[in-house]
Amino acid sequence: CAGCEAPIADRFLLRVNERSWHETCVKCAVCLSALTGTCYCRDRLLYCKHDYE
Image (cartoon, rainbow, N blue to C red):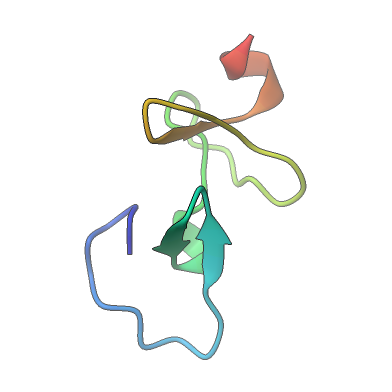
């Protein structure tokens, strides 16, 4: 997982920015809110819209 670096053994995984993530690890790098709809990437980190701007 790109977020926690642990192996992904879950039934589902997410592909974001060409990297694999646990569903629970897809969160904003600043406020740590879960990113369920849209996310923004900068320098290989994920952000919510508010923290990206």
